[in-house]
Length: 177
Image 1 (tube, rainbow, N blue to C red):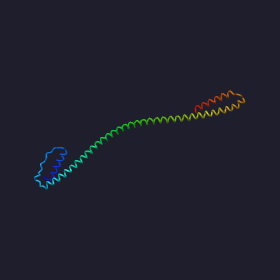
Image 2 (cartoon, rainbow, N blue to C red):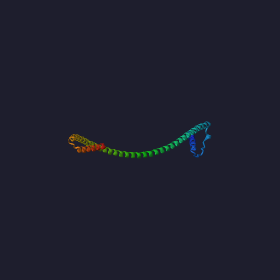
Image 3 (tube, one colour):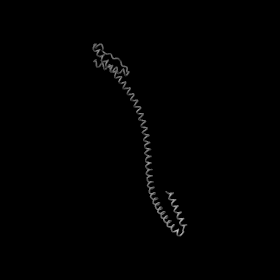
Image 4 (cartoon, rainbow, N blue to C red):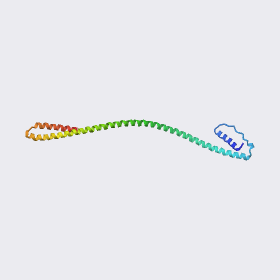
């Protein structure tokens, strides 16, 4: 048996012991080895043993980091689930807002058409008011003519009835405006 085989056998035994599996001890041909070979094998075994301890420590650190990473992943999954729920709620709220916006847009279109109609009504009313103002000016002119004529003819009653009509029209205009 060469030294390399001996180291592999020893390594397998140490690794298996760390895994807590019972293995029978191997009977090594120590009697056939020289003292120098025994010392060399002892040094190699000591080196392998220290390397295995370092590897075991590193693996333990890796296991701890893995456990911590797993815990963090669980928290991240929970956060993602919460975010998904919130996004779902936001999506439904967004859909509700979209439907409200569509309704508001249709209301705005309706209001715009009402404003156009009101503008045309205002133009029509302004035209009527101008006609009424012209008629009032005409009536006032007639009244002034009649005053001059009536002072000469003394038809006061007709003059008073015209003045009453003009006052009613003026009051009506001031109430409308």
